[in-house]
Each structure stands twice: as structure tokens, then as C-alpha cells.
Amino acid sequence: MPDSTTAGPVDRRETSPGQLPDSVFKVPTLDEVALRAGVSRSVASRAMNNARNVSPAKREAVARAATELGYVPNATARALATSTGSSVVLAVSDDDPALFGDPFFSQVLVGVAGALDRSDLDLTLMLVSSERGQARLERLLRSRRSDGLMLMALRADDPLNRLVAATGLPVVVGGRPLHGEARWYVDVDNRGGARLAAEHLLGSGRTRIATITGPMDLQASVARYDGFVDALAVAGRGSDLVEHADFSFEGGARAMERLLAVHPDIDGVFAASDNMAAGAVRTLRAQGRRVPDDVAVVGFDDLEIAQHTEPALTTVSQPIRGLGQEMATMLVRLISGESPTPVILPTRLVVRGSAPGGA
Image (cartoon, rainbow, N blue to C red; front, top):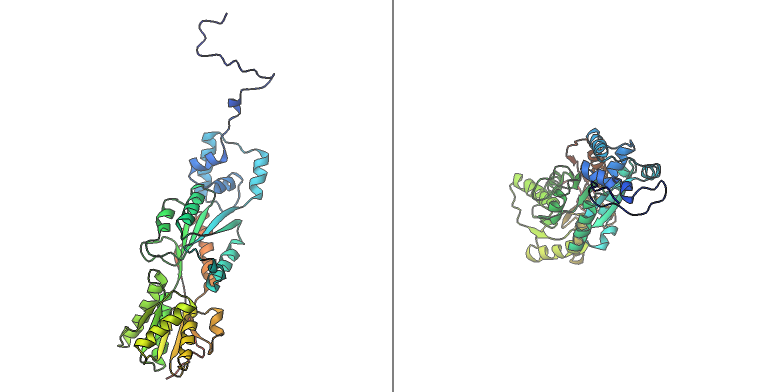
């Protein structure tokens, strides 16, 4: 007969000699350690294994969480962790598959990959302009299986800004957002470069100078337009000869058609990308205008296409691969616990046949 003083039910599950109930074997997981420490799972893994690229503060937080939870990694898990790298995400606010063939983006990607090659971080690439793409990115970030994020091609009021702010992960932006402040970003001197382009056209004796802008909900487009306006204002010229396009060859060609239809006396054009400048050259030639004799053309980017137009494009050169390298380097530093400052890369004018120097 059981002792009447026994409190609570008796566990009558049968166990083998030396076997304990299943509840005894419940141990904390690495995911629980990461959650308590406020870091991603991969950071927790690297901290537990004394790997590099973990800041002292995060290392201490992980150690404290592991102690509080009683977490002890087994040998197999430790071996797996030390042989598997963590990852970062490069998210592009675009859903056009042709993006992968775009020479600008491919150069950025080469720069990012080159910088990450010097770390133990893998790269995940995502196109996230659609709601479905944004949802996929949100799931990935909230899973804490990524250490950080790089963003490209953000437009005004892009929902990615709000999504990323809620994750608490390190984020580096390629180009400054049009609205709001990014704490960490890498950009090029878009405004200064456009000013160089317009000054070159003015210095070569052009008096009716137009511009073809990119999408005006992108900060780069606005900055390049502002630089164009700056130069004309200093010269006492108006800046009303403006058409907007989408950075594409066909967009530049159509914008040039519209400009000529309203302003047939144009003698100079600054297009805010080489693709648009090449499209403008095609339209000018199709309408019997000689480049540069009748109309001089200057682009922006210094992509390979700039050397294959007829004549070759005068353009503003920006360090595209360097943009990707600096973004990835900044993100690695953030993950390591450093506090880097924003980076603005220089631009320079490359003079070719479409707009030679001199009056």
C-alpha cells in the first residue's frame, strides 16, 4: 500500500535499468542560446567555437546565455559548426531576371564576392521587389540564419526600409535611400560626377544642353540631375531641357526622340547612364544628327558599352566593382562589432569621341 504522505501521481512508465525518463534528456539548443543572446544562430555558433569575426560584446552575450541555459555543445555539433560558414544576404529591390545580365549589377556582384572571399561568409542573393519576394526575405531574416544584409536599388518609401529596421541585423545600403537616413551606406559622388559632365559640355561650347534622367524615385537619379542643374546654374543657363527614362538603352532612345521633337536645336546631352546615352546616340544618328559635330553626348558609369558606341562615349567613370567591395567589407566589419563610417567613392570624367574637349 502506497505511503499516504506521497504527493502527486507516481510516474509508472517502465524504464530499462539505468534508463532515465525522456524529460531528463531535454537540453537547450543553439537556437535558444542565440535567441537569448540576441544574435543570429551562426554568430552564436562561431562564438561558441572561438571563431573570428565575432565582437567581444557578442561573444560575451553568447557565453552568458549558454551558461544561463546550461548549453554544452557536443563534439559532433562542434565539428559541424567549425566546418560550416555563416551567410549574408544581398537583396535587390528588383524582380527583372534581366538584372543578372546587367553589366552594372554584375560588376557590383563581383566586388561583393571578392570581398567576402576573404572572410568565412557565404552569400545569398535575392530579388525582392514583389510582395512574395519581400515575404521570403522577411522569413529568412527572422529565422536569424543570416548575419547581415546588403541592399541595392532602394526606391523612395521602399517597404524594405521598414522590414530591415525591424530585424536588428547589420545592414549596409548601396547608395543612399532617397528618404530617410541609412546609418551605414556606400555611395559614389553622383552629384559631383554629373556636374563634371555638364561642365565639360559647357566648356566645349555647347549652349543648348539637355539631360536624360533615371527614375526620379532613386537617389542616384536625383543626385545626377542636381549635379547637372548645379553646373548650368553657375554658368547662368537654364535647365528646362529634361526628359526622364529608366536607365535602359531603349528608354534613352525614346527620351532622345521626345527631346528632339520639342527642342530640335539641342547641341549637347547628358544622359544619367551609359545605356541611356548609347540609346540617345542611336536616335541622333537615325535622325541625321552627327555626334559630336551636331550634338555632343556624355554618359555616366563607364560600362563596356561606352567603348563600343560609334563614336565611343565620353562618360563619368564610377568604381562599380569598388562599390560592391566596400559594401561587403563594411558589412563584415559590422558583424565583427566595429562601427565603420559611410563611404563616398570618387568619380572622374573619361573623354572619348562623343564629346571631345575644346570649343
